[in-house]
Length: 429
Ligand SMILES: NC(=O)c1ccc[n+]([C@@H]2O[C@H](COP(=O)([O-])OP(=O)(O)OC[C@H]3O[C@@H](n4cnc5c(N)ncnc54)[C@H](OP(=O)(O)O)[C@@H]3O)[C@@H](O)[C@H]2O)c1
Image 1 (cartoon, rainbow, N blue to C red):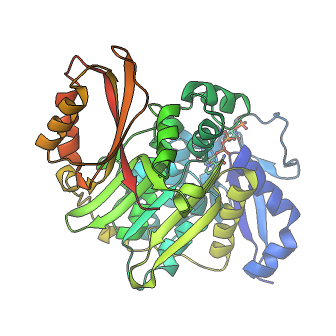
Image 2: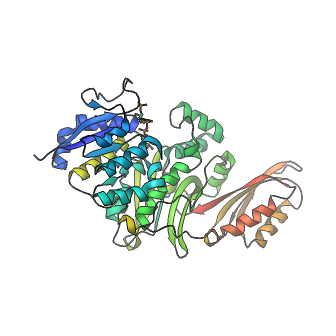
Image 3: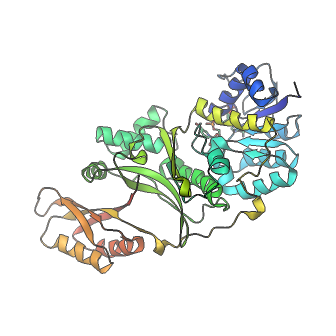
């Protein structure tokens, strides 16, 4: 058998521990598939003495994680996390040293992916990241290699299990966002600092990578609309049901006649469709591959085994000699932006207004919307409570997003309207 592929693992947490375990326990199977053994020659993390799920006592330990770039490894696996700090220093110096890199770090690649991809290509090494978007789902490989014949029209998905878990629980229990988030944190489904997840940032990092693979653009967060789920109420979720929909946090990257539209936001999706029906911490991605049609990918987007599975797939590819460009095209050809302007976005919208139940309020809202070119398809106003707050919800016909947003800015100034209206686009599932 040929020379082993020597692997160094940086980070031995959820993902790194999982990868170490697979390499230590499934060596024969992997060697058969890869055509040569995958040998873990060195590991590093913050605390050497920490009790870990993976028994790495037989593997050399490096105190300085960035020093793995100078080890004898052929591949450095970066599983530390964070867009800068030691993760970036290690990836940068490993590529400079002519080592292949495998990472699960979507934040790093969303910010520095284009530059690191160019460096990898210049040094003739691979920079692989299957685990960075949608965990165990092989969507990176699919967009990079499989669905290329007819081009990609759109990639849409539920890419953050924490948000999907929270929205699923809110629907099942009728409880408000803050309560369900606290429970998710207690159960370990949400981080102590959940900002990146619930604010849409984590989905945005993953979407930037998928958009780059799909459309040949540099990963780009600056041209992305990013909205989280903290403003979604149990009432919105209940009203969504009445319109035959479910609210999901979607990442959407779409080629339009006006440019590429990239956005992360809650959307109303029709029940009975793949995007609506995915529950709990699962992920789903729908890739529209031109004449080849839509493809649906569903599975676990996080956790030790799914993520380790994706990292190991990248390692086996590298062991076989795969050194293609990181984002499926030469890094020098990746284009900057070409964002679709906000005023080109059109959709139907769900709108919720909390108003005082007084005569004329509905007419006032309807006429302001009409002035913005927005017409109403259906409406629900439940119960009457003269002089008290009530909710009015409506679904518009397809209209311009800037038209609706402009009308809401006027409506919110009315003394009959309480707080900010909620505006959620309707999205095909
Ligand atoms: N968890 C998932 O399900 C998942 C899914 C997809 C992608 N990812 C990505 O995978 C990466 C790792 O995530 P994770 O969940 O495995 O994280 P984690 O459990 O927090 O593990 C991080 C590891 O990095 C080490 N580390 C942190 N700072 C360090 C430093 N300054 N120097 C040396 N080592 C340091 C930690 O060392 P100690 O153990 O000694 O503290 C730990 O072993 C992240 O980029 C994440 O976004 C995770």
